[in-house]
Image (cartoon, rainbow, N blue to C red):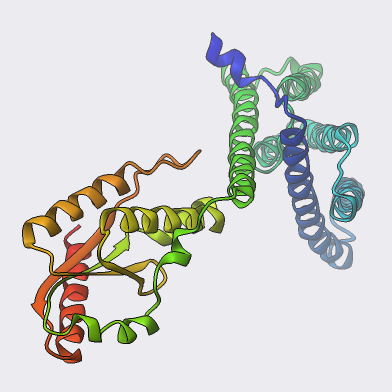
Amino acid sequence: MQSIKKLFQTASDPRMTDAINIRNIRNVYAFSLVVCIVEAVPLLLYVMFSRNSPGFLRTLLSVSYCVAACGTVAVLSRMIVRKYNREGVISNLRSNALVTFFYLIMSAWSVLVDAAHYGDGNQMMTFYIVQFCFISFVVIRPRIGSVLIALAFSALYFALYAQDGAIHIQLQNYYIFAIIAVFSNAMQYMLLNKSEKSKLEIQELNQILQQEVTIDALTMLKNRKALRDNFDKHIGKTVSVMMADIDHFKSYNDSYGHAVGDTVLRMVASAIMEAFQGGEAYRYGGDEFLIILPDCTEEAFEEKKEKWKKAVGAIQIPNVDRTISCCYGCERCLLRNVDDLRKAINTADNRLYQAKEAR
């Protein structure tokens, strides 16, 4: 019961309401414009080539009504969208009124069309197509939508009942379709609400991260140009070389924004600086890091590496529910010349990519 009640609740946050309204009005604009064009073209062809066909006037008036109604709604919704783009404000009353108006005029038209089809013994499709299109493309606030959908289905039924008692309608299936329409509309609103809520949370998170004043560990890492300058002091020493990068780093930028991606980089860099003290850390590429530890035993290097892995796994970022992880490749060698270092870096880099492929 609580789940059903929750399904019919509307957004309470004004920002959420605005986000839902503008997205809905944009959908109304696109939907009404497409229907207007799709109906206008065959209407023109019908007028040109079928003037003498039976029922010409009725068809002309019916399709003209649809074109005029959709054209009017397209113009009104476009005006609201332009105002929002210009001022960043959307009227809740105006947007809901337009959606309600659009639903009512299209439902009334489809009821009249299908009532006429029913009386002629033809198949009824227009009403169901209109309902399906609204459920798919336009969202009505759940409580208002439930009333409007119930009224539309009732209006069609009574229109058919007035002709012959609606004896050709399977009442059970008719009611089931009406109930499905009500719940589908409510579910569409709930999904739209969740989608816009996620977007707002990500925007808030990005603003928080951008405003934070923290020591940027990335600026403390050396760049690749400094690698050659620091090489001479390692000649004759045994060094441990590690290449590492962040797993699926691009997905952080794509899913949460570049501010979150930058935070992930900073925190991984901070973990590197903390774990590999006594060595040199370089930012080798976008999310790729190079660590060089001179005169470090294999046991000590393993301890530092484990410390770093635990630190990376423990990183937590607000509203990011993913565990950060890294892949790495290592090599140990005696440095006699720059070629030895180059070979060690290439070997560590190859092992990094082998680890990524294995993962």
